[in-house]
Every structure is written in C-alpha cells, then in structure tokens.
Length: 305
Ligand SMILES: [Fe+2]
Image 1 (spheres, rainbow, N blue to C red):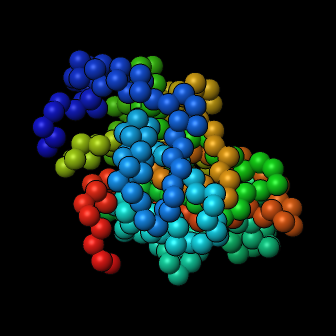
Image 2 (image 1 turned 135 degrees about the vertical axis):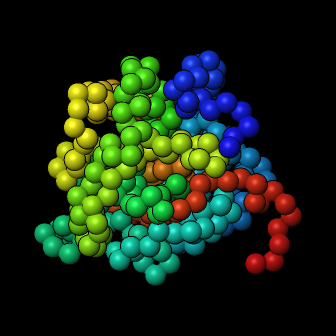
Image 3 (image 1 turned 90 degrees about the horizontal axis):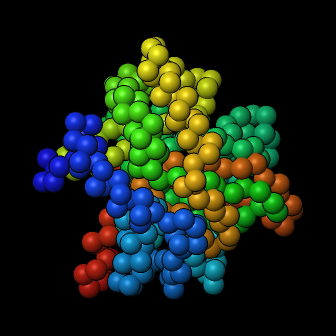
C-alpha cells in the first residue's frame, strides 16, 4: 500500500484537498509547456529524461520534438518508449510487426481497417486507449509519434485524467463513487476496433492501483456499444463527465508535426477530423503498453544493449 494517504480516498477529504491544490497549481495552461526538444529520442540524455519527467509529473503526459530526424523512422518512438519504461506492448492484429500501429486512413474506408474509425479521416471523441481491454491487460502507457501530419485538421485534444477526476469529484463525490463500481461501464462482446471476438467486458471508469496507488481511467464518450450501469447517480455522473470534457478549461490541444510525439499515462484524448493531400497523408505510429511511464531507467550510465 502507498505510504502516504491516498488523495483518491473519498473518505479523506484533507488528503484530496492538498493534492488537488498542488495539482491544479502545477497543471500546464498551454500545450507549449509540455514540449521537450530531444537531440535524439533513441538515446536520451539525463537532462532530457528530467525534462520529460517534470512534464509527466504535472500532467501525466509530455510532448517531444525532434524535427531534425527522419520522422518516419519507427525506431524513434520504439526506442524512446523503452527508455521511459514502456516495454510491454499491447499487440493487435492491425499493428505492425514491431507492435506499433500505423494510424493512417485506409485506402478503402468502407472495409477492412477502414471500418474502424482510427483508420479513417473522421473525428474521434474522448476516450482512453484500450477501454475495452480486460483488467489484466490494462493500458497504462501510450505513445503517438507523428510521421506525417495532415494537410489540415487532425489535432489531438488532451486532458490529464486526474484533472477529469478532480472536476467530477468537485461536482459531486458520489459521481466518483458511482464510476468506481466494478460494473459501472460494460462493453458488449466483439465491439472493439480489433474486431476480435472478445467476451463482454465490465469495469470501473476510475480505479486506483492497489499496489502503487496511482489513478487509472477507462472511458469512452461513445454512446453506442456501451452499457452504463442503471441508476440515477451513474447516469448523472456520465452526463457530468461528458459536460466536463466538452468545456474543461484544462483541455490542451496539440497539433503534432512530423518528428513530434506524445508520451503519456493513457490520458484522455480526442482527434479532430482531418483532410489529407497527396503530399501530406497523415500517419501516426501508436504504441499501447501495459506499463506506466518511469524515468529512473536512463539516469544510470548507459549499458551496452
Ligand atoms: Fe486513442
């Protein structure tokens, strides 16, 4: 168990208040505050690791930028991830051999990959990645590396899930309790982008890791293919959360340019619709991990691989 009182304990308001105040005071108010310029994502310096750690401590995410390197090189996000603790990739049948998924519109948006919204030009509403995964395959870490941005559009709105927690708890702590129930949200069988036969999957929206005490969030704003628990409090909680995500002053919006990427503890995010041109066909490499970000790996002197 964590040594200090958990700010996520609904019975401990003083611990919550102290944590909340510090969190809101430190939270970045501009996406620019998240950006860290990297000389080479494949080999981080201790200073760069510190810079990434500082951003992630404030917002559970950081954006790196390495505009001088070939943005289509998949070793950039792959090796960067390993240096910050992201090792155990969640493979799916649409991912490439290295386990990263190439998110780009399918040639045929009516079939194959194109029947899944990530592989179209369409907007994607608020979600955390892998919300349909079983509890033993929780997605804790996520990366998005931009190989090519679109001619227009394709921005990502971002919100630290701890901020969503704060705004919902401030609205009504009972809403948090409702969304921590193990059957708060149910995904019917066979309803994920992988199109793999999966059993029905129930779980909480917010959960606290029993060993390490960090907060996780499992969420989609989709209204189809989601079954919310019956009851007035749950329904009101879902509505209020949707309202928060529609209007939160803490939402940060990023337009990832080639060579830029997001590393995060699976924060809430969206994608806006976009338009490609023959020269600018949007391509992002996405990694989903069972690991959370950690920053104590690269501070020791580098060892031979
Ligand atoms: Fe996503």
